[in-house]
Image 1: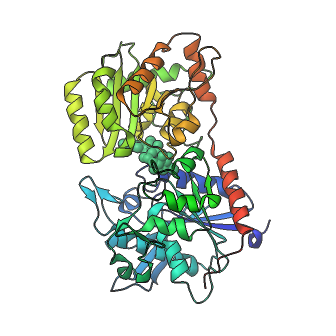
Image 2 (image 1 turned 90 degrees about the horizontal axis):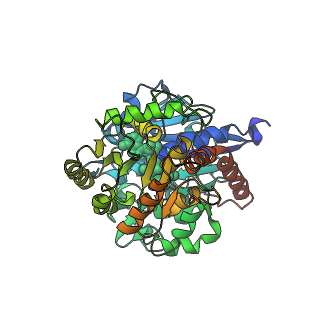
Image 3 (image 1 turned 120 degrees about the vertical axis):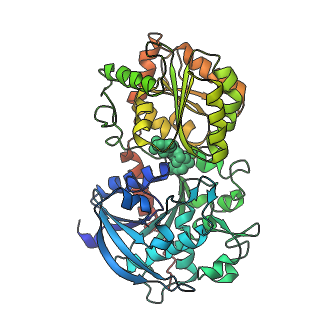
Length: 494
Ligand code: ADP
Ligand code: GLC
């Protein structure tokens, strides 16, 4: 297939592994374009901000454009663009040090950067300008989360006179509906958008400007990261106030389960692990377990099961429920290890808990990819008590590393973990439904009854190792969606 007939897809994302990462969004936007680009019918570029984290990691960057400008109210309208060659696709990084050369991507432990509205509006408009500067007309712009959503508002409501994007279709992916990008009404004027968009049919939302709404309203199609979450977000319980908007667009709303990168996350080769292992030979997993016990200064000769957690410390992830359940949980013969970073209140809550259960609860407040991998590999069980979970990747990493997930039955957790049935020996983990202490503790108890008990344990671990959540299938689903979108008439922004 020649270059002219390939479908051109431009990813717009605020973060991407390995360049800069706060959570699963980065894993997805790092891996999905790589798998899409293997399809000879697709050509992919990605655009993201040049965060300080990218510079600090010393990735080889080359200058694509030294000086581009956008039509922006006030003085700040200049940026440059750096280029990074990823596997099969190019990444363009929007460089504006005042906006993006910061310690964190979006927020410090004390809270969000106050100018996030300007920062990500600028990013969205600069991304469109970069495509134009490249003379690279996308067939599809595939934007991710609220930080990229305003691109669609600029396309619809400030269209370029030259019709550059006239045939472009817009796909918006919701990775997390709870993060909407809410800003005061006067923001629209400050980022060069018409003030009349501040009405409930457009971007107004309970007296604020809502960036995510631009993605939901002005896109040709919306996707989210698991089938269950695509249904949940159309209900008042999970819709975060946007369920009505989503229901109206339900014929254009698709649930495509995330994959994980089986090369990046592989216990047979992972350089972060002290020993490697595979389904055929799990000896290395015991070495990882020992190393994990050592890391947290636990007794090395112990047969107690290790329950791991790796998580952003955010309300979504169920730490309030965990805190309430700790007394019951830690009465059981187990170690709990937690790696996380995020909201200060949750950090404090966990630090207090650790003081209460010395030698039983291991806590590391940090963002540490190496330790995360040691926890996936060295734990016996992995706990995810999320209040809601659009997809969740950590349960898939656990399965991949032969660690048994215990999860709340919501969103993508429900689509990837199935309850182990001792009669049929089917199932790869344990689930609980109600967001309450008793069901959580019961699920952990159920899981513990099978710990190292044959023939159950080997099958349970093997079922996890056999679960297949590789990207190939999901990348194929996105490809089909792109093709479907191209069969629809273009909105013709001009
Ligand atoms: P979310 O995107 O909501 O945070 P996911 O389960 O989709 O949840 O993805 C979380 C990703 O972030 C995983 O790759 C996980 O390993 C990683 N992660 C989360 N917290 C940490 C941490 N403290 N240190 C290292 N990696 C982390
Ligand atoms: C979000 C969600 C998480 C999902 C990730 C990648 O951060 O919280 O559930 O796995 O995005 O799509």
